[in-house]
Amino acid sequence: MIREKDLRIGDRVVVRKAGDIIPEIVGVLTEERTGKERLFSMPTHCPECGSELVRLEEEVALRCINPKCPAQIREGLIHFVSREAMNIDGLGEKVVTQLFDNHLIVDVADLYRLKYDDLIKMERMGEKSANNLLQAIEASKANSLEKASVRSRYPLYRRQSSENSRPGFSYNGQPGPGDHGGTLGC
Ligand SMILES: [Zn+2]
Image (cartoon, rainbow, N blue to C red):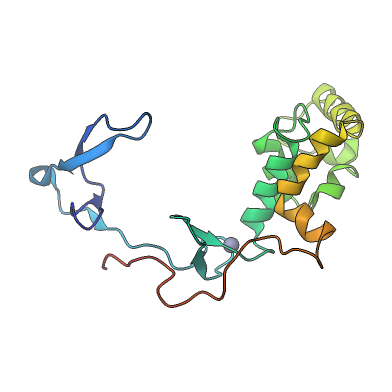
């Protein structure tokens, strides 16, 4: 589609309502090009860890399948504390990212080892929120099994708990040369 419509980064385009959420690009206003527009090329490697990207069966998106990829570990942690899983109040994406970037948490177990002194060093973290957060983490230990079972959808957990039975990703074979999507130029 990008190639078909000659879309470039920085282009002004005409859109129309198509589906419920994502509008359809009708065409490019080529007369408004300034010459600064850039051609888009599909990435072949993960911007975070540099691993080669693969396309999983029946998926359009390219994925990094490196289990040690920091971006994936961080997203896994964000999912773990989210409303859909452990629902730890006060532990949103920003705080998790900060804790992760400061090497205070590397896996979910580290969440339960966090201390007041670790938290208080975080940006925009006051005494009260640090204490509330510790309480929320503590309280999440009592979460129902049902809730905790959401963790089975969480790749980090799957890797740890079923290492010998099932791989964390249903990934079919080795990446072939055609698996990184089309390159559009440059
Ligand atoms: Zn990666």
